[in-house]
Structures are given as C-alpha cells and as structure tokens.
Image (cartoon, rainbow, N blue to C red):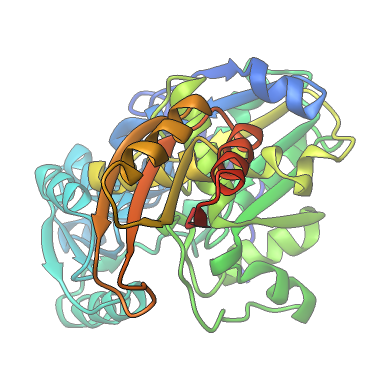
Amino acid sequence: MDSVGIEQVEAAARLLAPVIRRTPTVGSRVLSERVGTQVLLKCENLQRTGSFKPRGAYNRIANLPAAERARGVVAASAGNHAQGVAWSAAELGISSTVFMPIGASLPKLVATRAYGAEVHLVGDTIDESLLAAQEFAERTGATLIHPFDHPDIVAGQATVALEILEQVPEVGTVVVPTGGGGLLAGIAVALHALAPHVEVIGVQAAEAAAWPDSLTAGRPVRVPRMATMADGIAVGLPGAVPFAHVAELVREIVTVDEDALSKALLLCLERAKLIVEPAGAAGVAALLTPALRDRDLTGPVVTVLSGGNIDPLLLTRVIGHGLSAAGRYLAMRVTIADRPGALSELLGVVGRAGASVVDVAHSRTGMWLAVDEVEVSLTVETRGPAHRDEVLDSLRDAGFRVRAEL
C-alpha cells in the first residue's frame, strides 16, 4: 500500500502555500478551564470553501500529469470534498464533475456548482454516488479524486499539522475529527516525523464509528449503519491508505454522541464566535465529555475545527438540540384541569420558578385524557440542568402531571 512520508507533506506545503489560507489557531478559555490545560482551536472552518478539504484535493489534482488533467476530474461527495474538488479544479483551469446524493444539503450543492463543477444528483448515499462517479471515470477517462484514500490527499491534509507546529510549537496533544481518515492519517504522519512526542487522538460520531472495529480487526471494516448529524465524518469504510498510517501512529480513537456534538457546536457559536458544522465540532465534543475531559492530556491541546459548512436549517435545529441537551430548553407535556384559570395557574408556577415561556399550546383530544382534562404542550427557557429540574419539581409539587420531552 502506498505510504506517505514527510517529504511528500513538505512538498504539498510548498505547492499549497500560494493558494491555501494559513488558518488561525485561537485559544479557548472555556475549554481550557474544563480540560485543565490550555486548549486551542485550529480554525479550518475558515479555510477556502469552508473546510480542510481543498488541501488534499488541490495537491492531488495539481500532481496529475497534463494528459490526465485534460480529461478532467470527477468526485463523489455530500459536500465538503465536492467543494474542495470544484474549487481546486477551477483554480487549475480544468473541468470537474461531482456526483452528490439526492438529499445533499442545498447550500453545499449550490456552492459546488458556483465553484464551477458540473453536479449530478445520484443515489441516496455517498456509496451510490461513488459508484456513479467510478462509472463516469471509466466511461470518460476523467480521474477519480477520492476524498481520502490516496497518498496525495493524505499529504495535502497533513499540512494542517505543519501549521499547528508553527503556531503552537509546544503542542502536546492534537484532537482530530475523523471520517475516512485522510486528515487524521496526514496529521499523524507529519507529527510523527517532526514532533513524535505529540499524541494524536481521533474522534468519531458514535452513530458512524467505523474506526474502532476496524482497528480491532486489523483492517478496514464497514459500519453496518450510520445515523448522525455529523455528515462530514459519516464514512462507512475507512480508507486503506489512511488505515495503514492510523493503525501504526494513532494510539486512540474516541466516539461522541449526538448530544455532545450539538453542545459542542453551540459552545463554538456562543463562546468562540465561530460557525462550525457538527463534524467540525467533534473534537470539541470529545473535550467536553468524559472521553477526553477527565483524561490527563498533555497540553497545550489543539483540536481541529475541520469544517464550517452547515445548512442554516440544520443549524437552527442543532442549536435547539444543543440548548435542550445543555438544560437551557425544557419541552414538556402537562395535564391540567379543563376549567377557567387552570392554564393561568400553570403559567404562574412556571413564572415563579424563573422560567421564560417560549411556546404553549393545549389540546382537549387524546385517548389518555379524561373528559375534564386538557394537555398543554409547553416549551420554556431554563438556566441549566439544575434550574430545569427545579422547574419540573415546582410543577409536580403544585399537583400537575408532567412529562418532560427534552
């Protein structure tokens, strides 16, 4: 299997220097306090096209022979890799075709077309889109640009690590969101060569975690199903090229659940003033949960914010989910008597408990209701988990039947 060495990484850095942004690394006081050592954020969400993907895509396409460039390139992606390939091809003056799933995010679809790619919507999954892209490559002679399974892709992504070493020379731990493994493998290769004392930790969404079983099996193993908001790291099968490097150089890959991802996204938005997609916030999520928070990590810790391309509609839902997970939203169903003044009494208890009503609706229909009962659906703002419990206790102490939903 093709391997990647530091010489390839340094060559990629020279190639990318004129076109790729040197993204900032900024400190996070709130994360530093929670982890117990200095934590910094490597802001690849501010990279061209909104993710780290152009690093590998440009390096791969720029290294193609002239004859292959003339036939164009093709890719399959739900979004970030699509934009990276489209932008890179446009910068290099060659044609690009991208196959995306039918349900791909509209903003990512529009952006990919805006960068100059011809886009085809095929299949319900990336795997189906990839089959279509492979058939297109065989039929037309276009070069398939894989999102992670090629040495040039890994070498391009590895340039993130070179910047981290320049910006935080004393770095002790690097935390990396992980899907197919190109970014994780690249960072591990670069750090192993230049700063072997630095620990590299991968992070996957628990509902799309192919790497733990793959590392146990000693080979890439496909995850049977995926269901996560972190579509940027929802990859069913690790790449063979990244796998060889990760298996050798990365000691640990941890997983985070959907609540942790939404809380992390909300923290980035509120405290760091950075828009980050769920996949890009995976490292932050790990630092907020026992997976890494309770570990004695060697600092400073740098976590890569790998992307910021989030659909505004998803952002709205994730913010709501994050507020609920953080105990700042409480949705509940309350059974009250069907008589004048009962709703006012309910809202009075909520108000005296210090919660602010967001939404209220009531219904007299329901098989579970007695003829003299009404069910009220109520959403309120709370000040955190403790206050959330106080509101529920106040309602129950007042004699209301309450069922919390979030």
